[in-house]
Image (cartoon, rainbow over all chains, first blue to last red; front, side, top):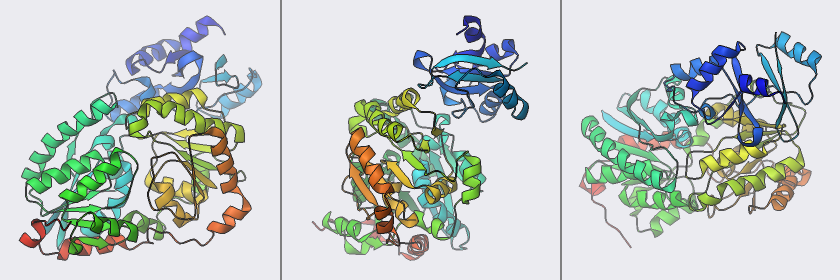
Length: 111
Length: 379
């Protein structure tokens, strides 16, 4: 998968939420796809998730894995039409495309 | 007026005590001081103290105690932190009674401190067996407690055999069943909507915690279970494990082996958990709820490994080792028509729903005197 997209839109679950905030600030898609070992997608994190976490007393050093959203929308193939339908009806801005083992093979961004 | 100090450290035993606190609240002769600690205060486990606040219960003291790491070492050391704080808290509150529940370390520490400070200790879910350090803690609590609330005949007999005086052992049933009796669980429609479940498909509820003395192996154990689930390809709702040693390995195993039909939840409200038991077709893993609460929903259960070993079971429970093929076969058996028929109308061996009132009556009326405070070991 496109290396630039990976750098811009994904982050490892072991990083602190502060790092997630600065990546989100730059990517302008209000969220990130969270990866575990071997590029497996384990969750998503949005600026809203972080805001809620901070309001309930989390620190900027809290690991992403502890506040990420565990249930997320994904596609099994890079179907742009389907992705646009999802973007239109739900308030998400990134959709990971996963293989059978939840490994990320592509990522579709909203415009 | 009697003031009852109640200690809760996990969402598990909070279910036992909530109905009791509600009754205390409505009783002019009783008041409560709620002390909240351990997992309730940890974001990793959903900061469930907020659930307590939403229930409009008054928290007298929060005691953060848990050191990071969730290993056997940090578990033990965290208890030392708790012991320092709870002593000062009891000294400040000066309760007439300490009410404990279950088998967790913080409950044991509270019992030890209560006994030393000459405050009577009452213990819910006393005398049962559980298969790891929790089981040892439960029986240790018995030695420090003055009143033992047993949830079933098996447990009350064990308490007597442990050398406890008969007047201290009260057979009351399991209080966490009381709220279910009163229909205190989320409706099926709301459950399906909230957790994005498909009502037409069968549902597996999966809850697997680490077993403390096998914590090094907890990741592999989870893997066996997830392999079985993966082969079955059935709609599954998986609940994150508690924070015992081995928890992170289970979480990692879930991340690695999670299939796309597995829905994961970090922390569930009690009424949602009960609502899920109500709509599920089977519960799989090693949660005590498979033995205690599931019978009230006539829910088949596959109980894996040692965690619940020796605990009284109803006919809904199928026991199996950590082996994916055996787990798969057990799930299929539990889902079969014959098994479903067999559990229909079953009796819950842990009673059915008036334990809280019995417990509150005893806390209110038992004489607090030397007879209660000076324990004689009969054996």
